[in-house]
Image (cartoon, rainbow, N blue to C red; front, side, top):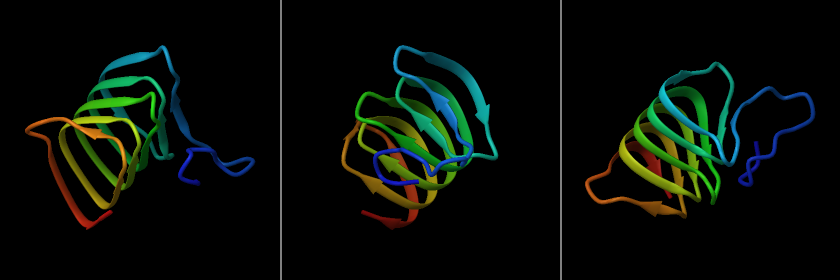
Length: 97
């Protein structure tokens, strides 16, 4: 998946579209792309938060890229941040950019 969140043709992913708000737990074996908002827990191999997206809560993922808003506790192998990170947010990662 490229940094803008588009995937190669045929690649499966879970999409939370702009205008959608999900509250609760989301577990996926596919990469997750958030253009809307998630309040809760996320578990997936990869998490991408678009500029219009927000994730508040907890996430345990392999790769995380965020151009949107993050708040809560996040655990990932690699993290690429260019968006907004709220106060008191905890990010644990092996690699942070």
